[in-house]
Image (cartoon, rainbow, N blue to C red; front, side):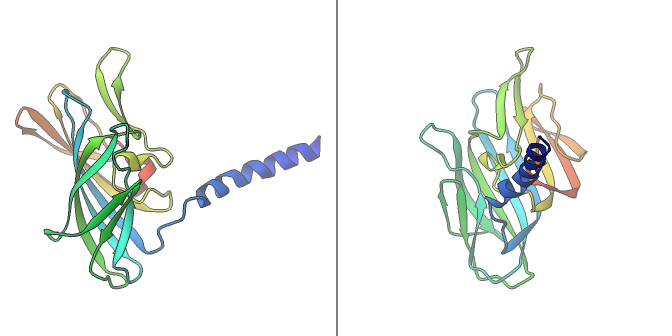
Length: 208
């Protein structure tokens, strides 16, 4: 019996290591910060989004990829409309859950900023449903690697970054995001809440 428990303990301890290593790290880059603007509505489940990433490159590359699930046959997933670097459009391809950006070759240690405009109906990660009172809800549940269903990210627990949220929602909603509330402002018939998280965290816990 004691050998059974020893075997069980060893097997249990190796599970997280093996699971994590099934998805390789991003060895050529490190995301410093994410800034997400998410516009939600009561008419449909489409979210309109903009993401700004500041990335430090660990080596010389002329392309790199982010994790983002493309629109699938069920109509869910994200459609990228444009990607800008310093206000200039760059080429990209989007297949499956890989968004590849074509860029001018980087230098080791160089930091660059990219803005991605996209929209769609999340297949997972962002759960759009109703609570027990029948109220419409949007709830981020990225654990462990489901954030890529609605956010263009490096969806790996080893990659930590700061994050800020600009949540645009109908005025009868209450919103919350990671970190500290910075401001609330009117945006037409909606309102925008701005949240910032200055401590780097993994994408699996970046939620609204």
